[in-house]
Length: 409
Image 1: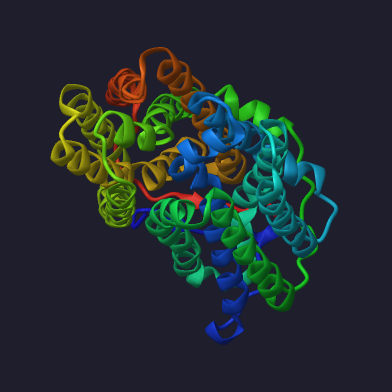
Image 2: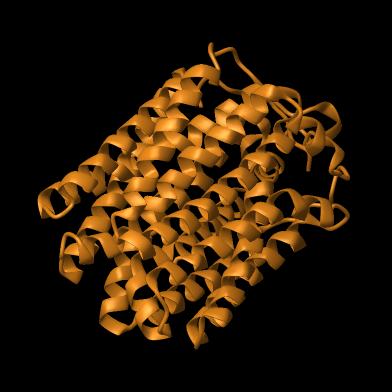
């Protein structure tokens, strides 16, 4: 986001500080939190068939564990800052990390779909709450001039989890059962909780947000356009990604080892896609989102036509991970450009839209997978991505004027 200027309004700014006063250990603890949350969120994608077989449910039903997390995350993102507006932010973050740890623990011992859904609901609370407050906390932990660097460090947790979660989860699930992956995720939660307890300073609330700002933002045309495109392209992505393992096993007929290798390639592709996507979005978020959408639509078509080929499927899935990297930074810049005076509230709506889209993709993809087979996910993706690209071309932002990013916590 090289075209974005970060500034904090006077009434909510942290005192001026030197680089020596930056709380880098605390920022690192937030990075651990991101890694743990993203890892836990996407583990089901690499364990879906094993979870379904063990719990004696369909793969489409197992995919709704992703839906539960996403729906609750969509509600929690704008709600947690409001519900905890009088609480010290350090306590809120510790509570969210504890919810992450409890979620993984319940998942380990789940004997049926209902118990597993309870675990995923707790994860949704932690996920939505964290993402709604990550940027404001970073603004308070480091001097303003170091804010971009701090956010870059925090977001490396996403990149590392993208690379590691799916392939390691698939490998552990094959070696020791799917529950072992959640044991490992729980261990990450313990480390994160201890790190945050030791490093996060007291962060008393500075404002008391309410829902009026969110209601006003939704009335703005540019904000609505961004949210609609998020719902389309992110749901398309997750309709394909959530059910990618059944496709590799039932259509391409890859071995477990090959599935793990392809998922590792997907993660590595996503890591470099984040870098490339940030570069393109820094110059034109409109172009980044359109290019990402068109690329994924084309790759989904390739899977529909030649998904039986191990070579085609493997390359398409790896490139899919790369193409997705255009979206996170692109949408962040778009939503801030749409509401520069209320960037924090707009960001909360963006998180809610992302989580709603994940749920929509998991539901829609699950219905198609159960009805027409594992190629249902790519079919959903083709339609959603095409519509998203068309809407972005028509209503996407134009120009790249600098923006002020405000904080409300």
